[in-house]
Image 1 (cartoon, one colour):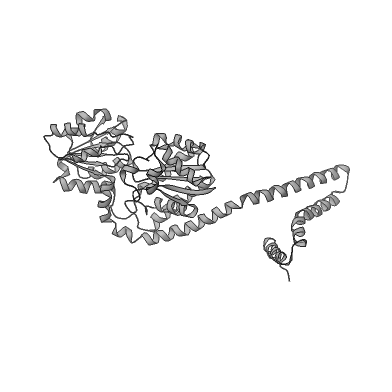
Image 2 (cartoon, rainbow, N blue to C red; image 1 turned 90 degrees about the horizontal axis):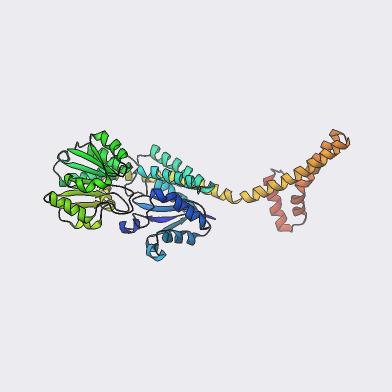
Length: 416
């Protein structure tokens, strides 16, 4: 078996491909169990965000594991092959460390990805697909990310998708304080956006979510309102800025709904930011003349403007990661000898039990305990040394020299 990380991200695949292979949180555990049932992997965890879909697994068949990703999403392997990367063993560990540390993110040093990786590990554990290898990988991944973030300034400076969305809005509207803002969704990304936009004290904020209670909990922080998703058509026209990030597999705002809202608004412009993958807003909405629509990829180019300070910390972070990769590699190598160690211990245990059983019979017969102990210790010594002694006596000259050196090391012998 082999540790393997494979998938696509914002560097290898456009948004239209990423949204086709995204996994929805409510189906994640089912997908993981389905993957294990194929017999191509022994362990698996899936990281699915707006910028990446990655599978971490202990693979029996590397090619079959990658085929599963395409088959699960009812796609041909050829259709995603140009965008797919596959990283084995230490390369997989290095990649996981870099992702969790924010070095592989669209926004260098962003912190949200670490929480998303923790969630991926939790879901795999709940699904029963997190075994010894992946548990070790994720535990070391989280430790490396913590080390990178506490010893470097990779996360310094205010650079995020939320901050970029605010800056874009300020290019379109003279003052956000005069605008009404609609947030669709109530997850972590929307909370971040609400905090950034809320700091500009907009005229009104409304949160729409499938669960109204959760929307209300977020809206209350900013004296805003809350509605259910099915109420959107009645309210959309009242909002100048729309920010959306849900886990919906289908678009929530279609071109027709937005066209009707624009007509009611008498074509006053709408600024829309779609941070969801798959997208919450139909791409055709961007063709409307009074709509300024931005996706996660559009914002990615903007956030690069504020990362010069973070960039200077990369080499230090990479050094921390490389040292951890070597530690993980050593652990993986020791895993290869576990079957041999187990077999050696099993053999020694069988010998021990047989000799103890023999000694108990001698004691039951009335033999002297001192003599029985002497017989037991001598017999154990002879049994344990039989195989190495036999190997030495029957080896040729070259092999004998190698065995002598190996046994001297194993038993700390000092021969003259």
